[in-house]
Figure (spheres, rainbow, N blue to C red):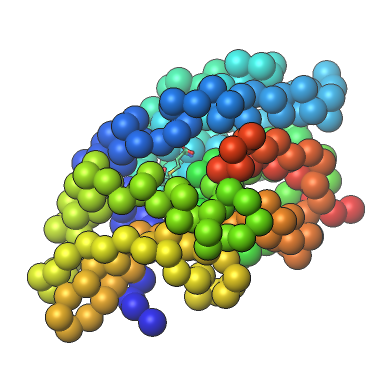
Amino acid sequence: MPTELPASALYSHPSLGRLWKKVHLSCSPFLHRTELQRLYHLPSTRIRKHFGHRSYSLLALGCADGTKESLLLKKLPKPTSLLALDANLSLARRAARRLPAFQKSAHRTDLTSSLSLQFIPSRLRTHPTLITLFGVLPNLNPLPLLRSISRFMKKDDLLLFSANLAPGTKGRLGAIRVLPQYDNPPTREWLETAVGQLRPRLPKGRLEFGIFSDPKQNSLARIEARWISQRKTFTVFSSRRPTSSQVETWIRTTQLRKLACYLDPLGEEGVWLVTRKA
Ligand SMILES: C[S@@+](CC[C@H](N)C(=O)[O-])C[C@H]1O[C@@H](n2cnc3c(N)ncnc32)[C@H](O)[C@@H]1O
């Protein structure tokens, strides 16, 4: 099994955040397909119905610069407070600047730590909370993260999360279709820069993309960029591409309950609105 680098190592330095944004602007289908942008404002109707006239807080996890949250908030009343959390503090600050809220703050966090949600200020929890988690589940181990969010949620809170899907019902075949979205020059530039910044240095090598099974869930397809050297192989980047039915299994096994689901017509992305099981 290759040694795996933490996903945050690809984003946490400001220069890597800028390179990731460049990849996003040139390669992400989200910016070029309106059907994908619609996934981020469609849930607003159901969210408005859930909160009624009550005030609510927004907790934006792994929000980067808040592009997707801003689409959603265009269709929602202004939240009372906003907390933007990301491994990259400059991106989280940018999200806090762009998103509307009466009180705002931004912090660096590591969502792989079970403590990351325990330091959320109590003032944020005086209202029901809308938690967003967009584009993070592909990079982090989904079950521990969904479980810790589920434990953190109060009865009236909502979680809206996205998953990058393997189109169709056969994970691996679907992942092959989307591989060119990753194996391209801007993504290589970002990942090779991240490799160059690692200390201790990785041995001389080359980057190769491929599709593998997730080590924690054999039937789950993972697109990986591996650094191949003569001595050792390292997984530098991974993106999980579940089928929509695998996402629904994650929801059930982490004590969450589905309220609604919005799927891209091409089956490449989905957004789920969930609440805590009673
Ligand atoms: C693929 S980007 C998605 C960004 C944005 N939410 C979107 O959907 O466009 C993944 C985001 O997760 C953040 N991230 C990665 N690992 C993290 C970690 N361990 N803790 C907190 N944030 C993390 C990155 O900094 C980055 O902003």
